[in-house]
Structure formats: C-alpha cells, structure tokens
Image (tube, rainbow, N blue to C red; front, side):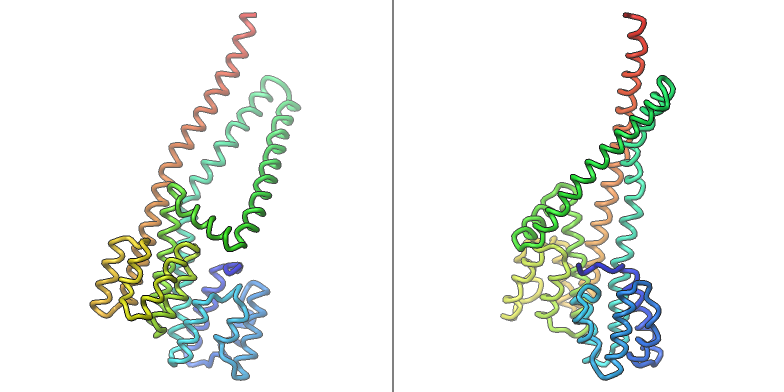
Length: 333
C-alpha cells in the first residue's frame, strides 16, 4: 500500500533533507546525517541504503523508485526534475509541502469528526450503562454482568462480520473491475460522494501544480497527477485527456471533456492559461476543492450531532417506559 508509512514521517524526511541541502550539504551527506532520524525501522533502512548509493553516484530519484511504499510517483518525478534542473533543494521542499498539506487536511478532518465519533459511541454505551445500572439497582450484580457480557459478545460478532466484509472488499478492490466499481460507488454515495470527488480533484490539482511548476511536460504532469487522485474513475477520465493534449489542445479544454470539474474551477484554470500561471492557478484550484470538501465534512458533523442526541434520547425514553411499565404492572396484576 502506497501510504503505508505515516505522512508525518515522510514529510519530516523531505523537510530535513531540503534544509540540509539548502545549507550547502551534498545530498549524500544530508542522507548520512539523517540515517538514524526516522522513527520507523523501514524508513531508517531506506535512508541508510539511499545514503550509501547516492554517495557512490546513483541518483536519488532512481533509488526512490525501488520503494513505492514510501515514495510516490509524484515524489520521484519532482526529485528527478530537481536533479535535472539543478534545484534539488526546491523540489525536496515542494515534496515536503505537498505531504504537509495532505497531513494538515487529514488532521483537520480528524479534529472535526472527533466529537461526532464520541456521540456515535455514546449512542451504544449510554443505553448499555443505563441497562446495567437498572439491573444492578433492581436485580443483582450478576444480572448487570450478564447484560455487559451479552453486549460484549454482540460487539465481537459484529466486529467479526465487519472484518470478514473488509477482507472480502479488499480482495475485490485488488481486481481492476472491483476497484472501478467500488470507486464508482464511492462517488455516488450520498453526502460522502461529493467529499471524495473534491478531495480527489484537490490532490490531482496540487500534484499537477507541483509537477508543471517543476518543469515537467504538461503531458507527463497530467499522467502522473491523474494517478494521485485516489479514485480510478476520476483518474481514467483525466488520463483520457492526454491524447487531446498531445494534439496541442489547451489543458482546460481537455479537462472539460471529463465532465467532472466544476465550472468555477474550470474558469480559474482558463484564467491561469491566459495569464501564463497554470501552476499557481492549480494551487488555487486545489485550495478551492479542499475548502469545499472541508465545508461538506463540517456540515455532515453538524448534522450528526443532533441526530445522535435524538437517538440517545429515544433509546433512553423507551428504556424508562419499559422499566416503569414493568414497575406499574406489579400493581395491576
């Protein structure tokens, strides 16, 4: 899996390499200085291997290709462009900024969804606690323990079923047809679909900006950026625009045929083509998509909170009615 290692570790590696190379160190010396810095054993071994090979004259971009779990195709292309153009420190910094931006967005999403996650957990735990408390007050500790044990058994069953479904979906996702169908389903899922689409275009746009700004040809930039989208449907749609680019058509006209890019983002891209600042414009397009995705996530979290509270209230109400119904039934018998 490409993103197996933590974003924070990889971002820090590129940031520290950029700082050392910019200070005047050779890349081999910079890598040697960072051999013991990474926290994960895998990344530490990779840095040590790269330090030795770079010192012997091998290009860093070529070494990176051997570790696709750690270095994405975008990282490799940017470093190769930096090696060719003599601005390796700039490209190392660009890689760090790209990963840091991705990490920042993930942290924002995690922070915004933290409270709703607690509420969803409370939907299950509060009724359980209430049942156990009632059993403890009206029955015995054994009855309360049995209720907790039954709940734990139910959780294990649900977890086992969920794990089985996860394994099955993952195997299905490894096939070309499965990946395409799952990605298509994600895009058409209510509420979540628009967020996935905007995030995919945000990653693609930011990658395209970085590659084009590094001097990579527009054709290669689009091909590599398309693979960073994380959604096969959008990737294939963007890849389909490559022949049009080879015929000399504008990027905006080629991407317009995908039918996926919103009109506002398309207008921004056309403006960038007129002003000659496609890379800067694509960064703004990426910011636009990220802001839209974050707004959608925020709306969902706002909706989850009152829904969760209402569900908790209904469950507790039914439990109270059941308890008092059983209590008053003693007097009517």
